[in-house]
Amino acid sequence: MHDKILILDFGSQVTQLIARRVREAKVYSEIHPYDCDPDFIRRFIQEEGGKGIILSGGPNSVTQGESPRAPQIVFELGVPVLGICYGMQTMATQLGGAVASAEALGKAREFGYAEVRAHGHTELLKGIQDFATTQGHGILKVWMSHGDSVTTLPDGFKLMASTDSCPIAGMADEARRFYAFQFHPEVTHTLQGPAILDRFVRTICACRGDWVMGDYISEAVARIQEQVGSDEVILGLSGGVDSSVAAALIHRAIGKQLTCVFVDHGLLRLNEGAMVMEMFARNLGVKVIRVDAEHDFMSKLAGVSDPEAKRKIIGKEFVEVFQTESAKIKNAKWLAQGTIYPDVIESAGKGKKGAHTIKSHHNVGGLPDDMHLQLLEPLRELFKDEVRELGVALGLPREMVYRHPFPGPGLGVRILGEVKQEFANLLRRADAIFIEELRNTIDEASGQSWYDLTSQAFAVFLPVKSVGVMGDGRTYEYVVALRAVQTQDFMTAHWAHLPHELLGKVSNRIINEVRGINRVVFDISGKPPSTIEWE
Ligand code: XMP
Image (cartoon, rainbow, N blue to C red; front, side, top):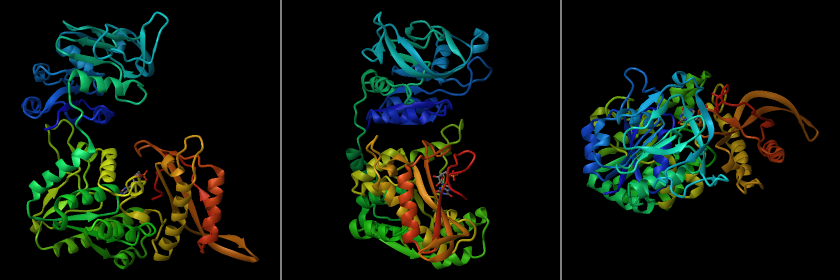
């Protein structure tokens, strides 16, 4: 059993970052809604290895009406508790301190960079600072985002941190090991955030650092073996990171009891089908059924140019093909999916006590009820970066595991308007050239390739023709656009400022090597107002 940390979520946008930072300290953590059953919390701590609790930030104000509170049991189990932002305010309120709103204090709300002075020589901050003032006070550079502030410390607490505008920016009751900060140690702008969270989980909570991928594999393998026994499992392989890592892990556990179904809808990237077969069937010896459904998809898409209609057709056809193939595997009892932890958190109804619903994989719809399949989701507790680490540890090529995301409808949303096989063939080749050059061009300042410096990059096919001249002849051919973005979360994105030489080389190569394309343009739109994909 792992030592672990319970994170109670009060609805902050950055709660997931707390879990990630804790896991980076090699300690397993789980996020649950703030109003989960007190009995669940008791079991988590007393029976399942829980060593501490973190209360996240959130959008509410404890000064107003029916705002959320931590279940009182959090403060009664004898384990360390760390409150962050709203978590600090509810801790203060529940333990007898006081909180006031910015309006009541006649102050502005505070967002952004702040310098916090450490006080009280607490165990949590001992030796952690960004610099010291000339008077010898330790200062932390942090990120603040709050309206309310704690104005009176609860009994037993002492001051742990302060700023000019927020006199109680941190408080501690070291006898009970309760700590709280008004600032956010989980965001990257708080430079010592990782050190503070590491100190909390490893020293204050005394968790062993036992969350390491190598060990995780043997545990996960044992768990899958126990769950599945001698049953057969089906998995829809898309070539994406999550389904690939799930396949490699399950194969490690049960070998030939796993059958993967790989549907090639004709809208994949250059050589993608061959690559998937090479990697799984040939190298790893996984049983993979490759369904060549290009013709079916293309005929269903003929004459359709509306983006939403295209997406619906591709999604529906995918489910049908997958169902037909899966139904042929008679003994299957399990459907494996590459669901990862952010999917689980997103689909857990906020505020609904522990109700976790399962988000269906974007590529693989449900299977007919009469197949009576149970779901096997071995990546449910992992974040994307952990899935990647696991993939590498399982022997998948690094290059594949760190690939940019690729949408379920594939090139179908990168060929504007009607999808034709001819267009897909041109686009595949142009896209491959773009990606190859991004991989091969190293940015001198960072030493990284432009592929790694961009979050997503691809070519888009524009079904318009323009005039060109090649050799002595006039050409009248199609246009491709290059799209490259940088983003943390894909909700907003900046267009990547690729070097002109790189763009020039890509354009030259595409026009020279891909007959049928005589013009290349570069997309310089941000999201919003544009989206990353063109359709
Ligand atoms: P947009 O175009 O909305 O894309 O800015 C944001 C991110 O989502 C990906 N995307 C999809 N992924 N199925 C997927 O699995 C889809 O239908 C889909 N549409 C967009 C897109 O590639 C980008 O990473």
